[in-house]
Image (cartoon, rainbow, N blue to C red):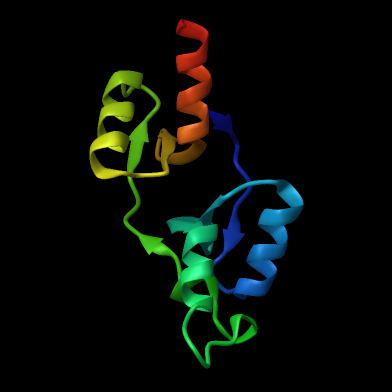
Length: 119
């Protein structure tokens, strides 16, 4: 898990989001509105929006492209349960909360790192 992940405001546009992802070397950004977690934005979400003719990423806010109700677990959720759900649902990541606050993000890359230590 990556603790204290970078986040993005729902009001930012997709050009800013893509730039931030590139700068940070990440594929997912938790989305906040007024300090509250509302969703997750992936680089795939951005590419999908950009694939439509007439869509200008500078005019589209993150909140219009993000996934609402992402997969969220508590820090006490077992790694097995998280990985099983991610594989079953084909999720690229899960958000991790502790005491109701965003504590981290667990991606399929993190899962592969764990797996590599077991081999």
